[in-house]
Amino acid sequence: MRHRSALLITLSALLGACASPSGLAPRLQASEPASLATTRSLGAPGEDWPVANWWTAYGDPQLDRLVASALRDNPGLALARARIDKARAQAGAIAANDGPQVSANAESSRQRLSGNYIYPPSLAGGYTSINRAALDFSLELDLWGRNRAALDAALGRSRAAEAEEAGTRLALAGAITQAYLQFDRLHHLRNVAEATLRQREKLQELVRLRQKAGLDSSAEVLQAAGSIAAAQAERRALDTQLDAVRHQLATLVGQGPDAGLDLAPPAIAPSAASRLPDSLPADLLGRRPDVVAQRWRVEASQRDSDAARAEFYPNINLNGFIGLQSLGLSNLAEGGSRIIGAGPALHLPVFDSGRLRAGLAGRHADQDAAVAQYNATLLSALQEVADALTGWRGAAAEAREQQVALARYEEAWRLTETRYRAGLAPYTAVLAAETPLLAQRRLTADLRSRQLEASAALARALGGGSLPTSLH
Image 1 (tube, rainbow, N blue to C red):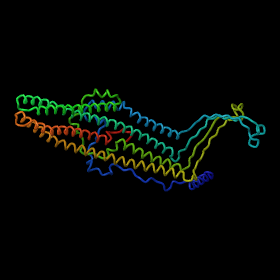
Image 2 (spheres, rainbow, N blue to C red; image 1 turned 90 degrees about the vertical axis):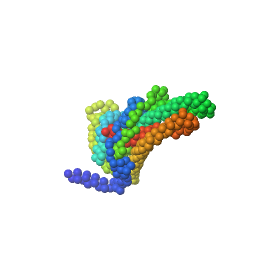
Image 3 (cartoon, helix red, strand yellow; image 1 turned 45 degrees about the vertical axis):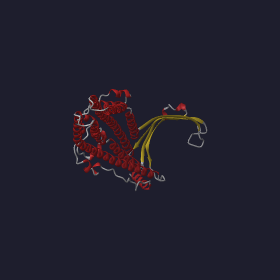
Image 4 (cartoon, helix red, strand yellow; image 1 turned 180 degrees about the horizontal axis):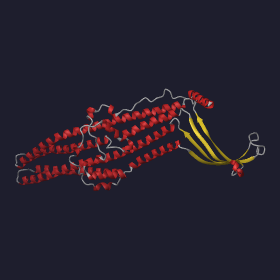
């Protein structure tokens, strides 16, 4: 009992004299989404949006197939998966530190034994071999949680890598959806160009008939031919842009450019642009992969700090061995050569010139950096959500007004064409009425595309649906 008390007193004295982490602490705190002012920009808490596989809301099976194929075959995902495998392997290596370690060791060396040491006169001063074959055991007693904290930090980094892989998948699905919506926009513009071309060709026939009747001159005929050439050039330019988007979609899917040439025109549901909530809770950002990844990195850095703090406390190992040892190789297999032993080993830092304090301060700096990065990511995410929601609201309001304007320009053009057919207006009046009409048709297609792209941007900004349960 007195020996035990003396050991405790000695240990307490050593702890009081050893290096200390006192006075060291991180400076920053992670922000919570709900604590940031968002009510006026995002509205009051509303429905849970978007759903997983958010791109299916556009109702286009071809888009669904493209995204599914990309999430299966795109080579960019292989890098993200390799990072996950590496992080998991590192966590496994750290977890092994907390278990027993057993190694088989054998060694033999021939040497001259000292004549002034522990060896008997028959061996002292002579040459012989020293041999050892044994199993060596060790077990670290993680009394202060250093290994546990290091393992938690490694697991946090592994989960961060998983969240980043989810972010890669989200970015890939978003890139395909964005390109596909551009594909849809270009098809609508091409339809406008095609309708314009057919319209001008009909007018050209009318101009020729009027010229034969002496009602129009060759100038009107030349103007009609020039307008047709301009419409054909516009259609050709749109075909070139469509081919470029086809190639882009094929690359994103992980295939050669020829794969994009077989794509049919998009068939996005007419109501897809209006499927968006008016208000969103800020805590939906908790599912966004980059926010989740940064949160796990914050937690990992906190556990790294805990592991560094535990370095200040005693490290106790249990060591043991069992095997054979002998002087002279011929004696190694004899029963008397058996060896066995076990016992504790204590390591306690007393003075290290500030190395441990510098290490802990560095961990705290890493923790502050992780918190700062998390807070910056959260603010950037909120801005993206607010921008996307504002863009959708603006495009929706413009689209409602645009429908009224388009109807009026359509009516104005029809009246002008009727007057021209009746000989009450010159051909230049038809062209003058057509110019703003074409601009309004293009604007209508652009506004529809802006609504669709804003809905896709908002889905991406909110994380594109739920993450795997293990990452929350």
